[in-house]
Length: 289
Length: 241
Image (cartoon, rainbow over all chains, first blue to last red; front, side):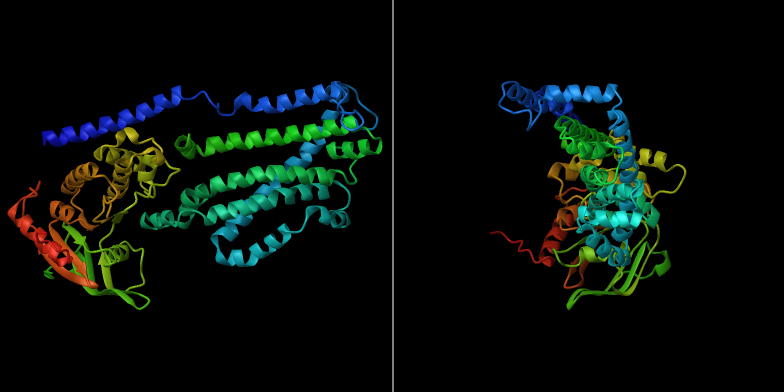
């Protein structure tokens, strides 16, 4: 009995020792390369510095590519003064952000609902999946003229094009996530007597999350692309409108400002999704780190 | 088998169970009774239908003919611990419990299996032995009348397996569920069970009661004799080389 006790506690201490040794090693082995944070900005900043250098040296003619300094100046002017053509940069940004927000949220929500239906029911898959797959392969750009005929030239066609941009990647990934849930966990659910709803909440949906997050990040990018396209047609406000108008007046600096704002938007959105992912998938994070 | 206890009072009762996969007969008109509180070990070579029988008893396979009854609740611990990776250990144990005290119950069972301080850990951070103990806790918390163990120790190292054997015996002695342990390890069966059955050619080829007191000495005469017999039944040549 005593030896039995010794044996078991012996095992326990070994286990905890390895655990703390692992933690210690993680602490001291941190330095290189550091995970994320501000250091992710290093390479973009270096690139911009090089660009400015080449512009100042005259290697990059301003007629082709304006320098970062000029772009910064233009951005500043667009923010502090109200131009008769463009309004202010921030109001354009707000208009674009609103379109993107509406379209993106609706697109993601619809995608998740569709994926749950097709992912869980063979009938749902049979009925809905071919339609979604067919629509997915139609280029958004090609649909634009039809959208104008169907939905007019107001906000609706722009929202819908963003919605579609967000919908397809999210749908495909969430569907794959649901179908990819370990069937042995489904078996476990049956053994534990889980109801259909409990199975969905505790096993299927959390199991599909990693894949759904990958889809969400793709959706951010593709819906922003859709926004640019949608805004260049028949808009009178927003970033896309600024680009189209600046193109007519050959104002490359303004085009550059808008493109950079798009890029920043994309980065911000991606960062948000990643932060959300880190929180939600903590069970995986601890394992992989 | 005795057959003296009415079927309704058995922890598990199987009559004429036949299961085919295509043309292959895996189990053929098999009869088996497990008394309440009895610890039965089932051994057999791989492909002998051990796991198929266990899956039928667990309600995971209904493609059989014949009759089968179990007295609920039935709990299962699988070969792989099958913890849900996105639920902490305690939530895993409490999964599917509907009582108001589910979480507290899960906590006290975790204490019983010596895993109290890992209650809030993520399953992916557990060692193999810890994961298997959590899986055992999840089965026990349901206070099963019938506990089905599907080779739960086969992927553990020898030392961990020995301490798991002691743990299982301790828990069985305290809670007294009927246990059906599927294993391919003759010594595991001899250490733990009241009765050993050998599955071969789609039916029960051999069955023996073990009377030796626990904790058992590996070199006990009864056990040594039975070991040779079991190895012979399994078709393993047990003579000197």
